[in-house]
Length: 206
Figure 1: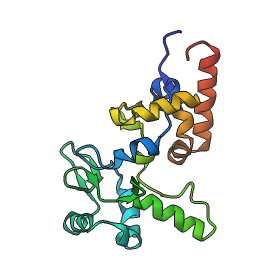
Figure 2: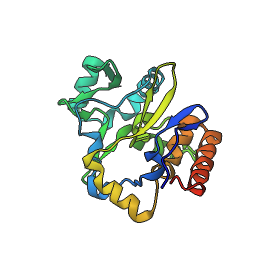
Figure 3: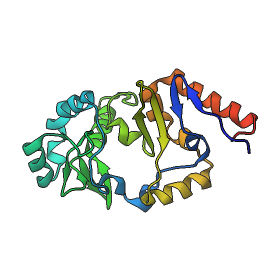
Figure 4: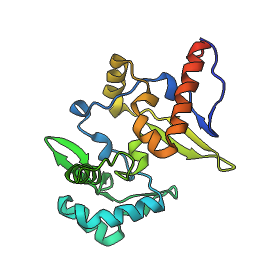
């Protein structure tokens, strides 16, 4: 296999791993561990904080007492040691919007938004559902010098079953994340990403 060139899709630098590695969340195996593992919350933008604050009354009843106390003290987000704005956490790890259902950790924001959309016959596929950093995982978005956006594949041991499931299905990361990538960058950009992957495959790069 040839050495991959730098992949530039519409001005966004895309790691080759996103095209070559396979991934598919396996909630039955991991039980949503990404919501409660780690030592910081999920990265959020100021616009997302505003969206979350608008939803707070709707999801409040579904949050734990500990989460409610944290939000009362510091709000829905805080700035971590690296200077990144992230969702507030409970006990040094659990996102305040984590809820538990049938032994799995789920996002209360996503659960409410999806059920609310269905109740009203709406399609909320492109509406705010949860922080885009959560929706895009295992892709991590960073901003490079000059404001260039870069997308990298993040490896985490708790997601090993997702890698195995993705390989069984033959589902590359960019295909698995079609919806959130489209939400973040738009349909035209995602279509260009797919065409780029297909062209690289034809040329023997992937």
